[in-house]
Length: 348
Image (cartoon, rainbow, N blue to C red):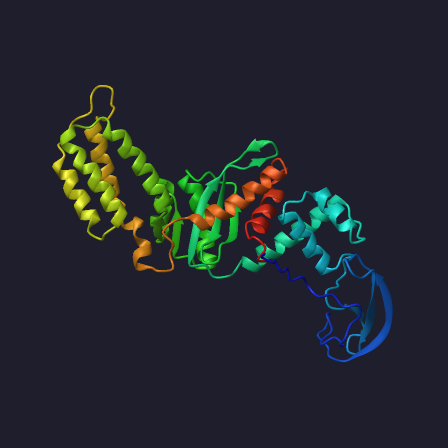
């Protein structure tokens, strides 16, 4: 039987050392200036001892809190425990009920504020960390009763969500406005996405390597080949099998081979309806795969680049599961917190 160990912040009932510097003037000499008994909300303690000190330099007094205690009524341990309960699937009121078994009474709005605090701490912690490979994908969560397009960025090195924006992934201008500050701040050099043209356009303008998710490529190519198999002339069926073989191998010479096959298929003009014939559809597929072949193989020469965008999909999946348990997000702030907290698992 597997056992899950959760490491929670330590909490002390009283301080075990003196302050190192004054919070106002950074002075280093103090006088003890009394003590207070502070009531706290915690699963173990109900009150702690807090000492006051007076700075000998600026003559101002301040409190020196024990480990795990700050100005809030709740200890750091309890606030972290609230977030863990919520990530595990409990509602706001369900979390309140669970905490009541420890003798701690909180309102559901206190739980909400704790979640926002933990999410903001995660956002600040990741704001300037370096990210080389960034996964991008769109989603359509339910916010305030309506489905809205969002774009989510995930660090594919550790699977941690980095940012979320109210952006339609098919709009290249909006995608660039969202991605450019992240590239400059985090040092991104590779993005991993699906095969949307908007991502390809933005990657080219920002000078980024672009790895297209192989799961998406093989899915839409396989569907296209299945449809063409029923309509193209029999003498060209070998082309479909060769495309399958090239995608399975992803050899460096695949780009040239696809182009050679493209030149063998006779070009035909569109009819009055403007619809492509089956052979024209096959020609378009060949030239599209040939032109974008390099973006399917970035993982081959950069070993830290994944060949799929599964890391981003997993973070979005956890956020969607949380959405179903709460019957849709009530606000944008709630969805952001859900992405940062549930999208990270319990690694925060």
